[in-house]
Length: 137
Image (cartoon, rainbow, N blue to C red):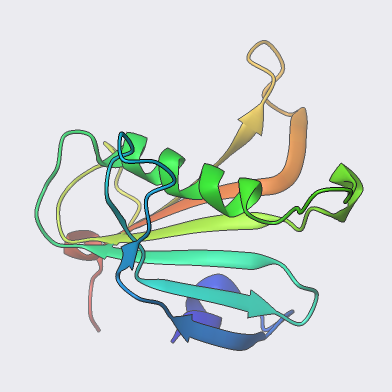
């Protein structure tokens, strides 16, 4: 299922899927608890975080940003260069209307505001799949 969502043209394949402890340890007592559903890697080392959310949460997009930033931060150890960072992808499967479009799959990247055809990087990607918009044939 992940491969068909992430790679509809079968250009890549998920090679590794890890269902992690649902609770991520806090870096300090002041940090908020986080929960991670699935982490996957494809054959090129790209990292995918997949989260399923049923209940609507007003801060869900901010939570997605928080989880994705952790995937970036946690990749490097002392002495490793930023060039070693692998691309990260946040896949959110939600059972509520989040994005005000007709699309069931909305994809976001970092773009230049005045020139949206210019993408700053392809190393970060957010996808939101809204299950209520999927039409079953």
